[in-house]
Image (cartoon, rainbow, N blue to C red; front, side, top):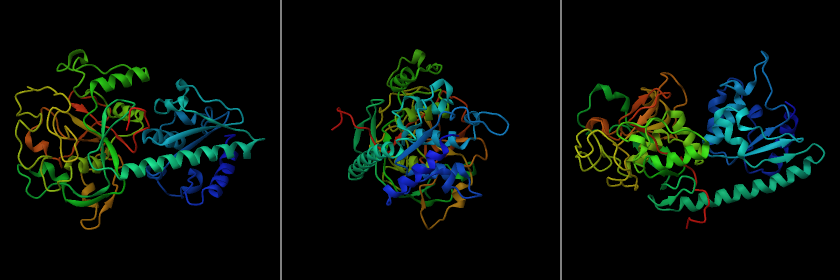
Length: 411
């Protein structure tokens, strides 16, 4: 592509200007033999800004067989930008030598939001001046983000803020360690749940904001209107999606991820979800204790709801001020399902920020159980799994964001 030379010059300049920050350029930093999908995703975990260098031939660049590269699901540029948008990373398109932002219809669906982002022009004849302006923007963005993250790190667990995009409550979950997996005194458990073993230490190195409850019908309607999408088919228990304060259901994993990208976030990992669900109480089978009753959650033994969803927040919150972490609806999780992944982790040294990237069974994890679940499925450590392309009447989701965007409505 005609932008390659500009990318190299930009990389050299950024390394000089930001000596204390790791500047990552995919073609320079991915070693031979590395899994580039995993390297890119791990890099974006801590990425503060992602620059997308777009030249005039960026859209039409083809492989040796004449296929447009962006149309290939495994194209590293497509994967990189998609992961950045999904993870809520600040993305800045750089338009080289009068290139234009591509229209959304010319992009893969997961990249369509790129067309609505404010771009920065870079011209060959004014390269140093244009990059100087860009560096000023980057310094401001990085400093502001770090200040917001520092302020969040000092918050008490369970602090609630309203996200200005979807108008839902998000709860601050601080960094920390916990024991992941089945507690020793869990009852009613048989070999079907052996994927919860062995219990092992996990360390989450960064705090995060998690939606206080499953995403509601009202919030998902706002998303579909903003994105020009249709609502999923309404289930019998919520005809016409009339119950706006109930969880949205009948969404695929990709639809859940797209919503989270809309709010600048992503789906939580299994580790993040379980840490949040435990609410600071490491030895409990359920968020509230070791036994379950109809007053605790919406599950199969609760006649009040008779096989339907309940309003989000109808039941008491857990120790982190989160609601409906078990029961009501299953929740889509970021990880691929691996029944043996716990066995690969150290029983003594904490595994930091684990996430399963490898697709072995073509299933994504779901957590939390639902209104039709039996008590053993309602335990925090229970691991469900399902085909990500399927939309199910008792499957919903909640989103995780690294920061709550500034809003005049926020304190």
